[in-house]
Amino acid sequence: MIFLALKTEDGRITGEISFYCRMLDISRQGFYKYLANKDRPWKYQDLADAMKSDDLLKRDFHSDAPLEKCITDITEIPASNGKLYVSAIFDCFDLNVLGLAMGTNMKVDLCIQTLENALTAYPELEGAVIHSDRGTQYTSESYRQTIREHHIHQSMNSAGGRCHDNARCESMWARMKTELLYDRYDTRKMTVEELKALIWRYFLSYWNNRRICSANGGLPPMIKRRQYYEDLELVA
Image (cartoon, rainbow, N blue to C red; front, side, top):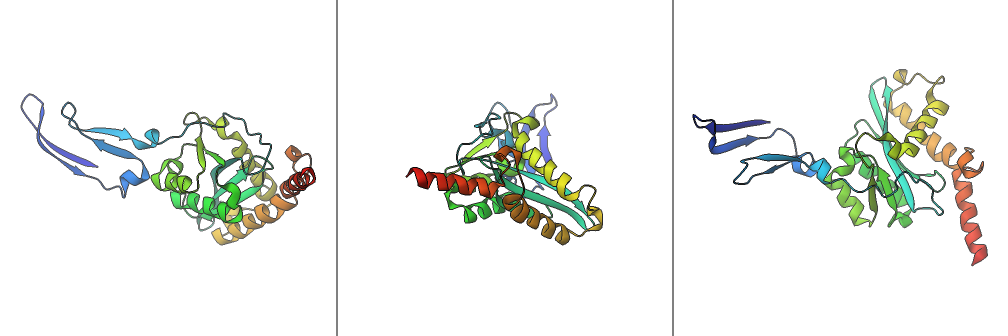
């Protein structure tokens, strides 16, 4: 950014201020806002801070029913021809992966695609709480608009940099990398497309349907989910 202003001999600002900004679509992405008043000729407010949501989960990742509490995050995996960014939404009820998207950048479109994929598979996700960190993807106006359109309640870490507020999601990434990648694949020798295929199969086939999960009493996520709905039918 370049700012040009005329100064008087005593240092006061006078004349018009020329404002040049090289950042694209800066207000929509939620980085800075230009504010002016008679006392302060210019002021910059970090919109990422202004657009943060409350921490609705407060580290309580327990859920008694599907599609009530969810967590989302992005992880990075190096490849031979760049980096692969993996974005997922996990259901706190059974750790089922509701939505998954991958790309070669971690811009907001990746997070929106993840949300749209989840809503396509689970339309009942509308009205749920989705918790994330305070990354600029999640504070951007385009992401928040998508959240609002689907009546989803946004929740964020209580303060920037407190990883424990989204520890459940971090642990999901760690398990995936330990089980799927470490000591098995050198991802730097694999292309982005090869990694995508590997991760799709891992989450949507193995993780959701066959992986034994101690948090689910030894049941794979989809088995626990099916039992939940079967029990509801019996009660009805």
